[in-house]
Image (cartoon, rainbow, N blue to C red):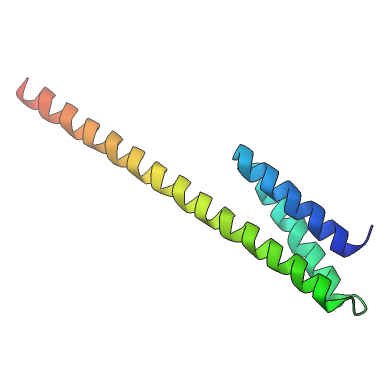
Length: 97
């Protein structure tokens, strides 16, 4: 299997992992993807148009991942804020209760 095919397969696997919000798999696939990209750039010249197309497709996936990760992070921030507000309300209730 060529490195370009590996990049395509990794990109598809990243999309599947993102759909499932499988962050562990995304981390592993990210490493594999980085290695594949490095290998393809170190190899003998390939069809630049095909390489560009693959890398642009990969860039789209990474933008989707970044957007999803940012959304997940914001949800966690919101949840932590709600937990802290509940703790503070509980403290006030016990103080005056």
